[in-house]
Image 1 (cartoon, rainbow, N blue to C red):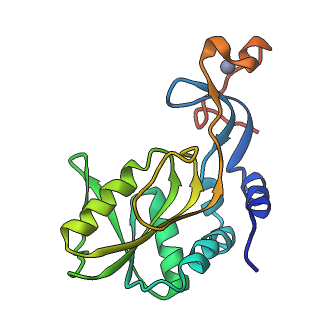
Image 2 (tube, rainbow, N blue to C red):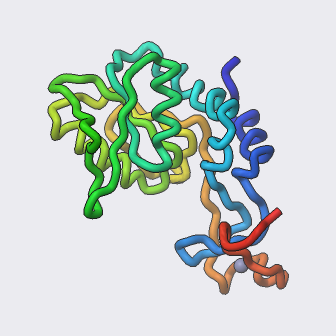
Image 3 (cartoon, helix red, strand yellow):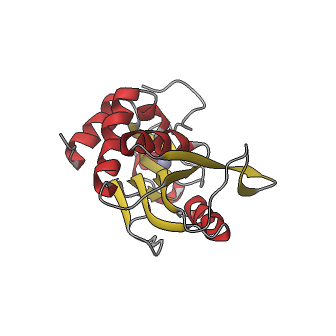
Length: 193
Ligand SMILES: [Zn+2]
């Protein structure tokens, strides 16, 4: 069974990946929603189901290898590759730029699907696309779990997300939760319900 957006949202809430409250984001802005994809991927059964939506979307594509940027993308790339029965490799950061290490390599003309957990600006995915091109391999598509770009990112290849979660954030001055006097929480810094 292929999950629809409503079912995915339910899994996010059940796993604590999607929290509702009053949060201080790393950007310094405030939001009433906080999303942490690792919280859902910590459950292999959920990872299998959600990554299955990406695998299903790309199953008719000619793919040799799935590649993902560390760290967030690794679980997604591995699970999508497992379901498509393809090779899975990842890039990792070395001196600020992403690179292939551990003896990973790409052949000229190798067909590559790029996977990621969350796309906001798409920075890591654009870097991975450049790496694939530098090896003379071919990007055939980009698959990711959550699109948080508010529709702004275009990778220039067939791209697919299982769900779109718009980021709605406020400056402290305009934040409705601040006006209501609700305590702001920095996610990860303390235990939150
Ligand atoms: Zn606030």
